Structure formats: structure tokens, C-alpha cells
Amino acid sequence: MNVLSIVSCCLALVGTAQVASGQRVSLRGKVDQVPPPRQEFFVDGTSTLLRSPTIDLGRFVGEQVEIDGYWNGSSMRPWVDVRTIASVRQSFAIGDKRSIGGDAHVAAFGNPGEPAFLGGALQSTFVPIAGDGTLFIGPQGILPFGAGRIDATGKFEVTVPIPNDRALVGLTVYGQAAILAGGTTILLTNPDWMTITK
Image (cartoon, one colour):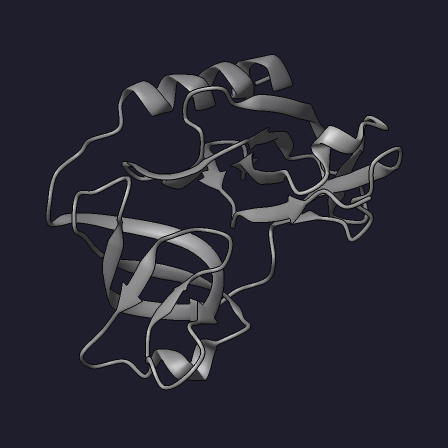
């Protein structure tokens, strides 16, 4: 399957998303925490709250994880009742250089040869895709950053120029990748985000 086919499949998946309260979902992301005294956890860079009456989510703060659980059905104020959680390696990242007139380095991580599509959006969302994970960007107005194959080092990276326009300072861009893992399964990666600086 070529890279263009991967892009087409990913966009088609958005159209097949089911929206139902109590739907079982899987997702990847970094666990973050609202500062004490509130004991709320969420997926970094999103508004997705994480809850569990049986799992100490505090043990996973700052870690990339894979989660399986039940979703409340809202794309605007989502929360997930976490049933299982496990630490995993990061599968998507937006680099640290984010200033106007500079370049952002956007990367997906996986197995050599796997096709990857990197995209961004000006908003985050929560759209479960049955069997493939959760889309955290868009879904309207997904901006393609690039598509290609993961190299021998386990990385596919593109350079995204940031226009030298002061009006962009403070703008937040959300990103995520879709990887054709093992040649058969689409994996929606963890999300990441950047706020453009001067």
C-alpha cells in the first residue's frame, strides 16, 4: 500500500467514526495532571479527561501510554473511564523550535518501512476510530504536514516552515500521525502540540 493510499484510508476512517456514549475506545497519549489540590488527569495537549476508580493514574503522569476504556460520547468535553493503561514509546512529536520564521520538525516513530502520514489542525477533538485508536486533531481542516516511510532509524521526519508573521505568535497547532503498522493495521499515534513564539 502506498503513502497516498494511507492518507485516503485515514480520511475515510474519520467518516466511519461512531459517536456513542459508553463506547469502548483505545488511545495513545501522554498523561498530564491538573495542579493539586485537584486530582484530575488528562491527555496532554487535549481536553480529554482520564478517570479510574481502580487505577492510580498519578503513577503515569509524564509518561506516554496506551489506554483502553469507555468514552462518555462527547467530542467537545470528552472523558474516558480507564480500564487498562500501559506505558509505551512515543510515536509522534513536534520539535522544540517553534518560532516565527523558523522551522518545526514533526516526526513519527515506528518500524522501518512503515508508511506514515503526519497532519495538524488548529483545534483538537476526540473521534474514536473503531480498531485503530482515537483521532485528536480536526477532524475538519486537517493540514497535511507530510507523508512517507519510516527510515532505518525508526523515524520519519518532515520540516514545516513557520511563516515570519507576528500575527501567528500565540497560535496553537495540534498534530498527530497515522502509521500503517505491520503493513495491515492503521495506528493513530499520540497527539502533540506547539504554540508558535516570536
